[in-house]
Image (cartoon, rainbow, N blue to C red):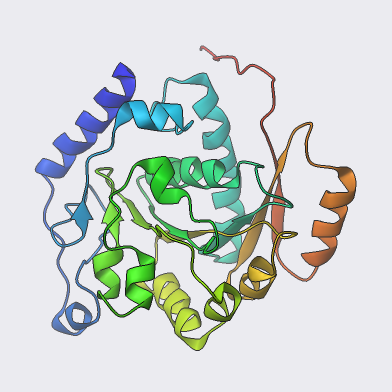
Length: 272
């Protein structure tokens, strides 16, 4: 826990000396928060919240601690994914699983945080598991001003964005289940939003946490809007037939690979 606290403290020190975001007047009319990609970022218009370190540990959010042996697995995954995305000029990634309880949300959060540690990128994590949103709960984010409030017309889109006190990392959370989720995820409004998020910053990676493929048609309806997909399966739980069926459903998409989650293999630290 102390190492995570130190990591967050170092990030805050960098932000304290960083220039504030700047943009042209035309861009400013389009978005409140101007995210830069070189050096630390100060989020002076996006909400910044403090994370509870103990809460993160209880929910297996580990990539803030670079010395945690388990975080190395996510750093390796990050490097492999970014290499493939860079080679194809991809900037949007969907993460899904065959069935519930495979741990896709934990993988999505840890991967996004690992990407944010890369100095060349910023990471935006979007909770599009509209029927069972969990990103905010795992991170311990406030309940007010979430994506559902934006859909209801109660707030502006940028008011729903949160920076969890980590430089180069922004979250679009959701706090309550949303009806007609498939229709919403395939609507013109969402398609325009995804396109805008993808094109707004050249060095931003957008990660969309989607529902399980076999639980609803939400994911398969939304996936054509993103560049590539990552499938998360649970060791000892996901059946081979379920993986085969998901691969069949995703055969027309850019499937980056399959992540084996919940493995009991113990990570070992490598020393030079």
